Image 1 (cartoon, rainbow, N blue to C red):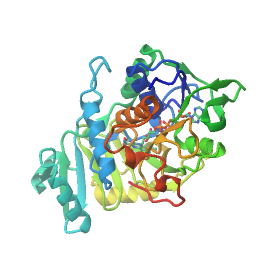
Image 2: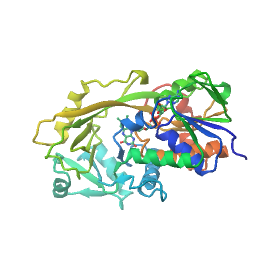
Image 3: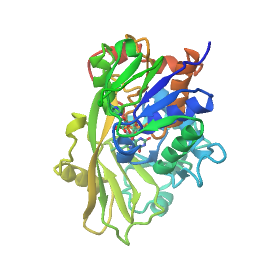
Image 4: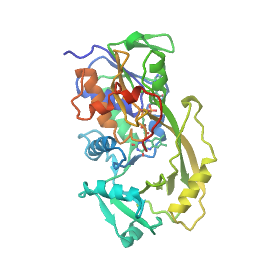
Length: 377
Ligand SMILES: Cc1cc2nc3c(=O)[nH]c(=O)nc-3n(C[C@H](O)[C@H](O)[C@H](O)COP(=O)(O)OP(=O)(O)OC[C@H]3O[C@@H](n4cnc5c(N)ncnc54)[C@H](O)[C@@H]3O)c2cc1C
């Protein structure tokens, strides 16, 4: 089968950039990436916590995360000037004796080479700010923090080098009939054999207006960064509490904190709600101990976009023959960017995907086109 002569990628976040890079690597020609804003990678891709955490409640997500992690640890030569991953470690902390702990201990046992249960003394040494009493703590020393700008820049550089044309300030107003192209806000029409929808929180509305049944829900999550303090050691690992979702990692001399709030939001009306601070600080006080009072240097809200079953939507649309999705990346789009773009490029260029989990991500699965919201953390 020949490659489509023209491919339009809608959206220049991590999904669009990875897809464009994968298309370029496969030798596709006539690829145009259109980004609504003045800069690439400026929406969800700039709002996230940049954590590589592969243990996930959903085994499909976990398998994709591990594939993404392999890329982040060993990208192709010349992809980026430095490492993409700071392997500061991920500390998964659960309540001892809880159902969650039993579940994690069974699942992590299968990954014994990558995970270590810490003794109380080791925990106090590695992460003295964590309240350890009554907990079990698992350390994944090879996980940690991703250099998101370097990842996005690597995809962009490779895409451009492979001939992808990138247009900024080029919002798509609508998909053409059957998604055989797009109409831009300035009235221009870009006809194409394939349109790849990588528009993050805005993708659902664009596709729905063109007749797609795929349902996505954008949700809001807050992040807080405390003031720089000598009490914070920048080498501490990422701390993840799974029983009562909360995470913290060093950032800019302070700590980045999230209480993992999650509520549906209109992406055009995204605003931080200072009230979330009280809730997050209460969790921080419960799970961490730091002598100093918490003072907040920065706070923001970001958007995580989900399909009803919490899995990604990567592959053909059920209703629009020209459309391929690379979206619904929820809270894992940075971790999984490479594999998402690879699977999307397979659907575009080969008309199918050889990835063993492709069917689980296929937007034609019943769950992606049904109402309801069951979020994956
Ligand atoms: C608070 C928070 C914490 C997170 N933490 C992590 C983490 O620790 N680890 C991790 O792996 N992931 C994390 N994520 C998830 C990750 O950030 C997302 O999954 C990922 O960035 C989604 O990328 P995207 O390309 O789909 O969307 P986006 O980055 O939002 O990109 C979509 C792009 O499409 C453009 N666009 C929209 N509409 C149009 C249009 N009509 N025409 C043209 N362009 C359009 C937008 O301008 C935007 O640039 C987090 C997310 C949030 C919000």
